[in-house]
Amino acid sequence: MQGGTIGFDRYMDIALYAPGLGYYSAGAHKLGCGGDFITAPEMAPIFSRCVSAQCAQVLQHLGGGSILELGAGSGAMACDVLADLAQRQALPQSYLILEISADLRARQQARVRTQLPHLAPRVQWLETLPVTPIRGVILANEVLDALPVARFRRRKGVPAELAVEEKGGEFIWTERDPRPDFDPAVAALLGACADGYTSEWNPRLLPWIGAVAAALHSGLLLFTDYGHPRREFYHPQRVDGTLRCHYRHRAHGDPFLWPGLQDITAAADFTAVADAASHSGLELHGFTTQAHFLIGCGLAQMAADLGAADTRERTAMSRQVQVLTLPAEMGEIIKAMALTRNLASPLMGFSGPDHRRRL
Image: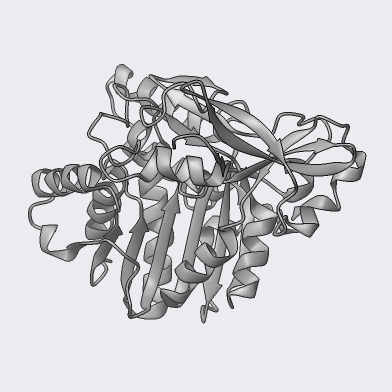
């Protein structure tokens, strides 16, 4: 950008996804202990075993089908889910991975070939959503928080857009008139917020959810991600929104610091996700915390079954369970949402506390 102003959603799109230059398109190591952040599947393989249990239940009810994973990261969850489904004798007809990053796609392919050579023929990589809707499960772990968002700041009672301007060779925030597509449901909550209140919203969410929903003929769309119901997302005390950047396992709030070299995320407004899903013909089957989802999928019994005689291994397993479930860790910060189409089966991961009323 040479001079001029663009919306933050456009800036975030470029910084994350520009071919060859964006954070997810370049070749730097991003995931895991040596990268910038670590997700549940990399940290705790038992997370993927729980996801596998939920997939097996859906596939059994449908009499078979496929799994489509959106943005598979390092490929850890794909490998662990497939290995567990093989043990359960519940393998899908195919495991599809939609991955727009050529670098990540290559790493995923290498991982699958190394860890699961006998199952590699079942795995297919896509660059776009499948034209023919699948019957089965669509998995999206920490995908919503990577969707480009727009920012706003309440000024004299009006949600002025926070755009991005280039000045003197640097990027800076600049305010401009409210966008005509600003979400009226968000605007209705800002009356209790003081001037200067800053937050995000996702103008691209409705068409994105619509496209993903169109790829599901019957089965489950499972989101697991950082986020809040709308009234909690736009709480008056959340004065600076949810925008966060990650670089070498350090979080900060400046998206202009290292464009293309750092991750940029924003929490999901799960009320907006549910509304968009309903608009796209999906049913909101369940909404709960990650802890309750994993417990519903059999986490406690799995941990007991995987317990080893070695003290170090038992300690490591105990730590994994704690990080996945404790409120101060991932247990309540990450939510799980089940969206279904043509699926009457109960879902084990949503058999516990039901938080749909909070949306």
